[in-house]
Image (cartoon, rainbow, N blue to C red; front, side):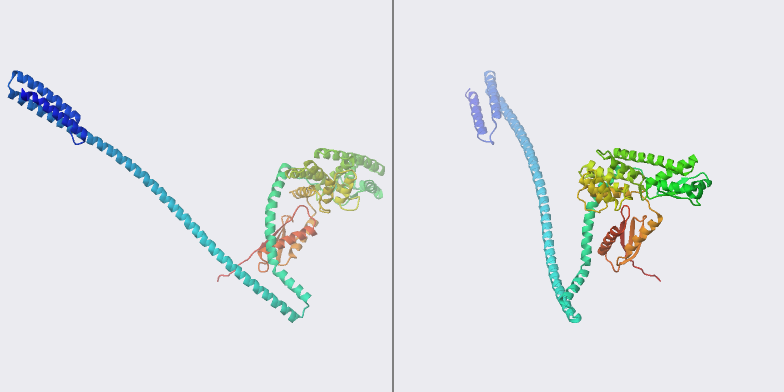
Length: 544
């Protein structure tokens, strides 16, 4: 009994030592293993008590030992399993920690790569800046060298000029004033290239800026006001049914034809041309009266002085009414307000007036609307511009009756009926006879040129056409260095061939400018004339 009852005490002592060992450090037996061992020992004690009650003490002790041994083995197995599980968890945590460390290392490597790229970019920029600094340093050195060379060259030129001046005094025995004039002439000749280059640069810049804006405004004006191209014949003919009618028109001893010419103020030309009679007169209204009277007399068949006077008077009255109606219709078409009846009647007379074959009344209406469009594009008063354009050629209605040019005649006539100063200046200055005092005068000049120069608007006689072409070519050939000159495009362009050995590119622009200026000053022509100067260098070699 002593040994049996002492067994649990030993087991309890062992359990306590296991618990203390487990609590003291990681090297002891875990608490749950000790507890399991205590429970097994208790069971063994209970079994031993029962065995001691019904069996021998030795057998009980053997069984108890077996139980203890089995419990120890199970405890060791369970401890091993727990250790392995702990190692597995530790390995998993280590693997996760390794992954986290690897991810952190990857981020660090990416940052290192970005930093390396930035360093490379900074290095390249630094190298580029250094290269620019080196280039600037080289350029500064070159500029300094060039400046030094220019200073040396200037000193040489001054010395040369001084020597030449002394030589002129010594050789030619010139007075100081004469020497000064000679020197200025030489300087002017040597500066001709520089002047031509400056003129070329300034002209190109001004033309580039002004031509673009002018082309835009002109194209818009032409596109918005599109009208048919019409031109009137300057020679009027009357058809006759047979050549016998010519004798009746002439009459006995020419009394009929004299009566017609006296009543109408027109010249009646009866020649050998079959089937027609020509009516010639500088006054187109008289010419219209004569043509209409002849047509009615021929249709009526009664030809004698009394009948002629009656018909001519009736036709003249009808023509006057047509003139008044045409003037009113033109004023309405141009949409003008407060136009004096005398001005309206004068404008109606332009229906029978032509300029290079162009009807002046239709031309005036066209110029009126072109002026309005251009003025509105420039932010000016379109109505006032339309009035200026409509009345600009009113002087042509009476220039055959009064002395002077039609601009001044028209300006004086319009002034009598209270037209505004802007309108008067546009009428008197649209051919640059007087200075322009308002913006509307150059607008009228531009619109007048557009209407006159458009294709089909005007034409002239063959003699005058040939004369104008010859004048154009002669002006171009008069310039120094010009070899050949050709008028092309019906006289609207002159092409000039210059000697490349005598004239440079810059001087070519100066020659074109001088030719254009002479053409503008010395010639009268509709529209504008383009001057094209060509300079060509030819290299010729013969292969044998």
